[in-house]
Length: 254
Ligand SMILES: *[C@@H]1O[C@H](CO)[C@@H](O)[C@H](O)[C@H]1NC(C)=O
Image 1 (tube, rainbow, N blue to C red):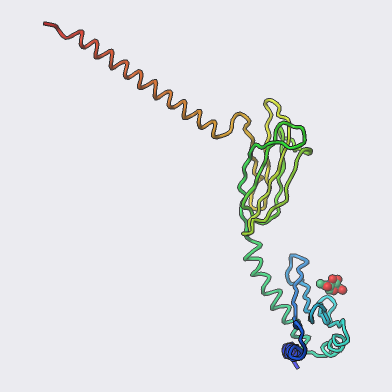
Image 2: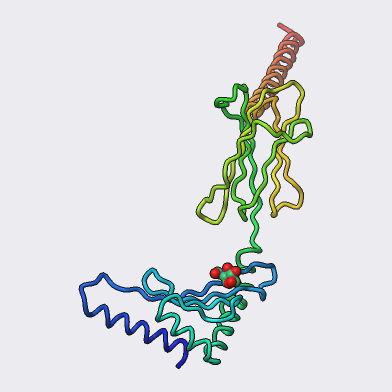
């Protein structure tokens, strides 16, 4: 009588048919869907549907509250099953087991996960806009996908000249995105990229330092340190030479 027994006999029927002709095969399957339309997971809409090859012939939708058939065979089964209290109770139990018990596991395992974006600002070559400069703001390794990247110029959000890419899936649950700003630099202005993401308590603002890229600044710092060291060594050598030569003069001769 029961639901599962029916599915099993359905599968047996399919395999019997397979044995007859030179077919590639038939395919019979049952799908359970959980549609969560609200935050409250107990308000889930549960769909249990039966398919044969590419045709869905029978479906239970908890919002409709009964079985509906889409083929002659489906309609016959729907009529029977709608009268069967055991099957109706089993559908409700399946909804609770598949949709409600699992939802909290999925929420805990997936939705609660967050990864902060790593944001980098780099200079690039402008393409066609006619502006001489291009900045690219890249956010890497964030989760979930939803993110907002904006540009600010002297505290004002920039509206034009922004080309944003889609969020790209890295294939390992993380996402990346890149936003371009083509612009004409002005002396003394402040340009920054602002990233908003659920993993960040406050928006992350990265300000472009037009003075010099980091590696150049490091090279100059190393050069300056070497120069100072060189001067110290020279001075020490000079003092040593002076002391030595003075000492030689002080030694009485003969
Ligand atoms: C279930 O039934 C309701 C009411 O007819 C309908 O709005 C909804 O789209 C159905 N769900 C699916 C997944 O077909």
